Length: 506
Ligand code: NAI
Ligand code: MG
Image (cartoon, rainbow, N blue to C red; front, top):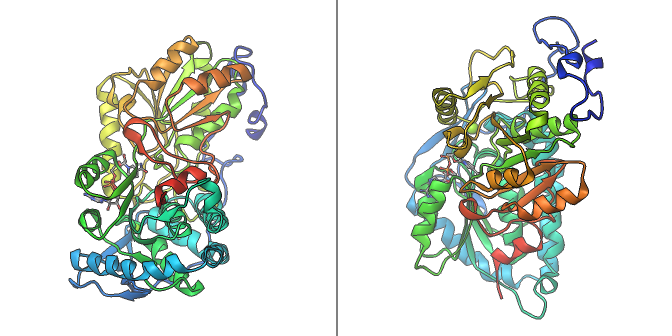
């Protein structure tokens, strides 16, 4: 009965009161929304401890320090990983330096083959990697299985193709590798970010020292294992685990030729200062407060799905999350009603359950940040819509998906990156107002536009100051399409032909 009220197809802006078509949904009762558990049963073999991957082998950290990687959905320790200090980073940089001449000299076609093998191996081990990603970081298995791991493999496939064709990407010039690349990545797309960094670097003939985030180091370590398995020479890929201090040791190491960083704007600024005045090349992919704009002529149901996907499916742990929603005034009541309705059907809970939409918040610290913003929003007078009634597990870090209305542009929830399943809904009257308000942010990573009018799409997209603009869709990625920001969202592009530029000297 409830299902019949959903997916009613195209809904014109003004016709029909939303209340007339929306039946409240509930998890607790029978109804079509009470699914049986559908747990993923595969469990990867996980060692008790993982050392640092340096020079093609797993080695103990010089300082003898280890830290736990925790499953944020259960608070259980999964295993221990090595904490790399300056001596370890130095060792990794030396290994990368030693491997550089051989790797550069290898025929590009052979390098391409090795990248191709990494891609194939990622596919072969996809299920294991998806489970590991979900256990370590809390994201729903549906996301890691259908998005993260396939895209990571696709990134290696794509760059395998470039390895012996670089001269066509830089017509008339001879691209040379930059050298040893220090790469620091965050916890929201652990393996995918590793692929975004490592694949283009290797395709261009560089060697790397990669540092995954301290809460999600495991899939990167498996990537190290895979590099060894497929025959990438020792020292070409080095993976050091640890927190901020380990990252800083990479940034400040004199033997590093290039830094690529994805993470918070604060740390990005710190890195930019450290690198200034050195010969190191730098690319930064930082935060965002990306706008999603719905015009009254849009297909509202389709837009709602895009908004849901854009902010809730990965707990809002997405740098380009559509965290500000601008709705044309005439359809605001309809959008708010439909958003509430859809939110009630999102399943929050066990990330290893195949029906879960919203998994665990990645860490206690991140949960605290999100809760701070929920308080700030209420404190500043916005109205919190908390309609999702999922029963939450007893342990772990959870935040039910929610949104605010009555949001002013000056509110912190409208200006600052929350990085959680929290949406700020605002309204506008004219296209000009939508553009002005959407661009009124220090960030410029992504944007979404929802309208049925083709002419409007091009007009709006060309005036939005964002690295990516999605039209009638959101959060769609492809290795061939460059990604990156404007303003405080960083600089440099990853993916596509543009992404190669960061890893060559011409
Ligand atoms: P973070 O920027 O501290 O962490 C990202 C990476 O940088 C991690 O690998 C971390 O170990 C490393 N790092 C930390 N301090 C460093 C330093 N001084 N030098 C070199 N590397 C360093 O991000 P955090 O604290 O985990 O999250 C804070 C906020 O940042 C989030 O609430 C979110 O708003 C934003 N964020 C944005 C991301 C994005 O994809 N743009 C990803 C993660 C967080
Ligand atoms: Mg973890």
